Image 1 (cartoon, one colour):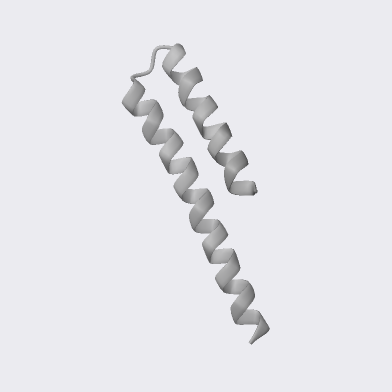
Image 2: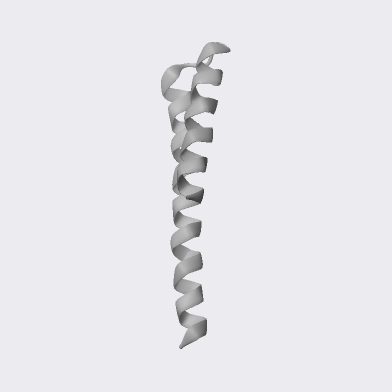
Length: 54
């Protein structure tokens, strides 16, 4: 659920940056970094939870 919220925020940020005059590709890279950090932290959190249970 959190990843979908982050993806929506990142897409909205991309559109806003593009409307403000940034290049579309630069805004896309910012959005991509946000989504990748969120996905990576979610994967890392799930792995850390499984390590603690063992």
